[in-house]
Image (cartoon, rainbow, N blue to C red):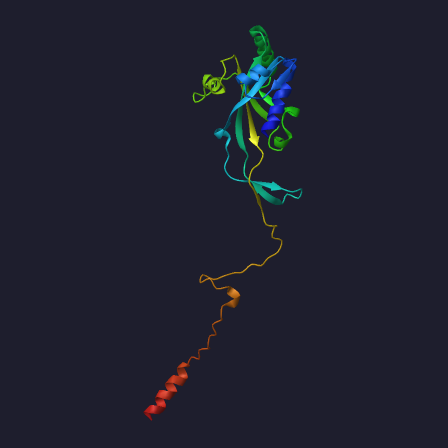
Length: 218
């Protein structure tokens, strides 16, 4: 996915330079080897955009609307590029940076063919920012120190993209037949509970009772 974002950024920057758009780290050795005007887009930071994180899985359905599997929401990441211009004269470098800005600023979103195919099922546009002040935890001066080079004018270009590989959970086929069991409060199915047989009750009539008492007295 990251290499596809590289190519999308290359497509945006290529009209600004007659030479090449490179993605190597702009170290002293790399700068000494270049022999043509170059725009360098160095990917120096990858961080998750936690504000976009979602919870819970969502269902994927087939043409009949039956759930076939469940997938976790994608995680979004901010890819930060340090865009610099390299020529033999500072004036030409500034001209290249100006051309890069003119190409990037109209795009607050990457859309259409610029969106990598791997993320198109998730989104049709990707947020893009140019020269926004970086977070306090990131210092461009520290980046140049780590690269071993001298501080140069640069554009901080950030593209936010989802990572398409997310956990997928298969689901069981839908239930199309079954049976209903009714249970009593004791948990025993109603059909298996033994029945209680009641014996008929024979009541004595009032006349019979009085006749018996009279015979005893005789």
